[in-house]
Structure formats: structure tokens, C-alpha cells
Image 1 (cartoon, protein in one colour):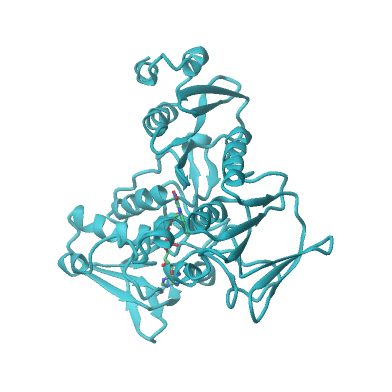
Image 2 (cartoon, protein in one colour; image 1 turned 60 degrees about the vertical axis):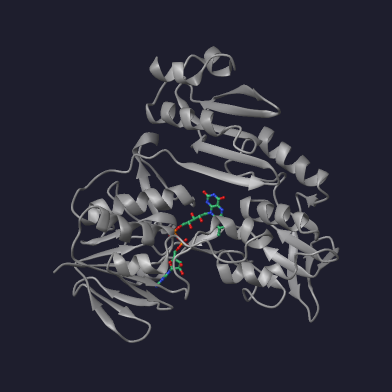
Length: 408
Ligand SMILES: Cc1cc2nc3c(=O)[nH]c(=O)nc-3n(C[C@H](O)[C@H](O)[C@H](O)COP(=O)(O)OP(=O)(O)OC[C@H]3O[C@@H](n4cnc5c(N)ncnc54)[C@H](O)[C@@H]3O)c2cc1C
């Protein structure tokens, strides 16, 4: 009987395991996860998990794995792969043979350069254990200093304010959300944080960080020190590629896979945050996405391709972030856009459409309260997928339904 091994029991690996069964695979499935917990969702870690619900939000109940005959090896690290002999060596010394192998090893929080890593009062936020360690610092009278004005840092800032902690956020670039978020939207997010009492400082140069017996400090290059009860380093994530690299797989900002998620070595696929892939929709440009929906979609696609379907990646990149009552959604990739058009949706909500020189819709970025932009971003996504060249005037005119542009 065929044996498929999946390394990485996160969103992507778990989805792939269930999708194999949904597609009728009857062989053996082993899902190996370094974390002790059953696969859980990471997006709540910077949102509800900290604020309201400390328990992890599991991808599926523990029983479901048994019902679906998915052998879970939790708290176990895949320590080596021998692609010639088709073997995976585990941290407990056991060796598993595989017919097909899926790497869904995800990413890890990027440590602050030169720092020893996580510990004490200097923290990162990637796992449920990280979130649990942060919770005690998020209460009135506490001060948390965040390095990095990206999504993780900003979501944590919003949650910390909600819980009554003081927040200082430092960013090295001239503005927050510089990577992938239009300035007009980033300015609204920044203003909202300031209105909520977050001290945002941009263009900041950090000389070093210091863990102290009580609290921690960020030392700025001008000599000033920002002292806090806790420092959160939120400067991005690095793909977990050590296992693949050691096995001789091609690496290019992640495990390099083709449009079918196949790695450079036979019978090994990679999916989710750990891999980079060519995106046909954008001229075959190689990208790596860190997004919940991408992890799910690629898990499903990997299952199909483990079964030999050789389906291609076609999904439009999509990402969301919740901060206070604001939700931001981005579909597509805006790099290379020549024109930006704005569509007002009322109550402060709006969408920016990004078009290339030929008028093709490349991306749409929206912001509003709750799910104010959700429906129109979904329609924009369909236009992006169709490589549409919508009438610019109609795109910007809020009374023209986006659905009608899709039909056109
Ligand atoms: C705090 C936070 C908030 C987020 N919020 C959003 C959001 O609002 N919107 C959004 O779209 N996305 C969000 N994301 C991103 C989203 O959660 C990720 O893109 C998604 O979890 C990626 O899934 P994955 O399975 O590819 O990787 P991961 O979730 O990283 O899972 C990989 C798993 O593999 C394990 N592993 C690694 N190496 C090995 C090994 N050698 N042996 C065994 N196991 C191994 C890891 O321990 C990990 O459990 C957020 C992420 C974080 C951390």
C-alpha cells in the first residue's frame, strides 16, 4: 500500500492530509509535526487567542485524524531526508519509508539580527506557545514595545491596546506596512493606531535590544532607550528550509517548486509558507506567500498532485488583516502597477484598484469596518483571475456593480 508522508502539521499539511482522503486515497498517511499540539490556526494568535480565547483553534478535532486514518506524529521533528532511498529520519530515531513526500514546514519568526533569539522578555509571535508567553504582558499598567510595523506587529498592537497595555511600535522604514500595502491604506491604519494611543515611530534605527531581569529595552542609534515590560520582535518570517536544503533540494526564498508544487527532486512536493513558486498569472514570477488561504489552497492542490493529477497553481494571492474594527483585504500583486483607481464604498470603506500600463487589473486593496470590502474584493479577485481590462471609469464609479464588469 502506498505511503504518503507529510512533514509539517500546520494549516497546509493538515489540509493536504484530509484532502487526500476526500480524493479517495486509500493508502497510508503520516503527518509529522514538530509542535506538540494538534494542527491549529495561526491567524487567531495575534487576535482572539490573545484577547478572548486562549485555547487554540484547531484545524480539526483530534478524533477526525483517527477516523480518516491519518497517523499523527506530534512533538516529532523530521531530522533528515534521504531522497534516493525515499526515507525520512525522525527526531526519535525512527525511519519512515515514503512513496511520496510533502514538505509543509511553514516559516519561523525572523530573529532580531545579532540577538540570541527568543526568551526572557524578548519575544516573537509565531506559535501558540509564543502567544501564551505574551498574554501576561498584555494588561493595564504594562508597556509593550514592538519592533516592526508589519501585520503581526500591528495586529498585536491593536490587541494589546484592547487589553489596556501601553504600546510603542518602532519601524525602520518611513511608514508602516511598506511591503505590499498602498500608502493611502497604511495611513488610515497608522492614524487609527495613533487614535487608540499607540506610539508609532517610523524611520527608527535600532542599535540593539537588551533583555533585563525586569523588562527589556530597545536601544536606538541616537542613544535613546525605549524601556518596556516586553519587546516583541515582529520583523517577518523565514521559510523553514533546513531539511530540504540538507537533502539537496533547490532553494530560492523557500523550497523552489514548479507550478505543480513539485520540488527539484522526484516524488517530493512542497506547499504553503515554506515554498516559492512561479505564478503564471503574473508572467511566471516566482513568489512565496505567507497567507492562510494560500496554505489551505496549496494543501489541497498538493494532495491532488501527490495523487498524480499535475494540476497547476492558479489561485489569486489573497490576504486579510484585522486591527480594531478595521479589516484590510488585498487580492493580487500590485507590483508593476501604473495606475491606481479608488472606489468609495461608504462609511469610510474603499477599494484601490491597481492596473498595469495596458489597463489590466493586477490587484485590489480594500479597507473598511468588519466585512465592508469583502464582497467587492471577491469580485475583484475574479476580475484579476480573468486577466480582465475593466473600464477604469466603471471601476471607480461606486454605483456601477463590479459584477457587471465581470460579465463584460
Ligand atoms: C500570528 C499570526 C497571525 C496571522 N494572521 C494572518 C491573517 O490574518 N491572515 C492571513 O492570511 N494569514 C495570517 N497568518 C499567516 C498564516 O497563518 C500562515 O500563512 C499559515 O499558517 C501557513 O501555514 P503552513 O502550514 O504553510 O505553515 P505553518 O503554519 O508555519 O506550519 C508549519 C508547521 O510545520 C512544522 N515543522 C517545521 N519543520 C518541521 C520538521 N522538520 N519536522 C516536523 N515539523 C516541522 C512547524 O513546527 C509548524 O507547526 C498569520 C500568521 C501568524 C503567525
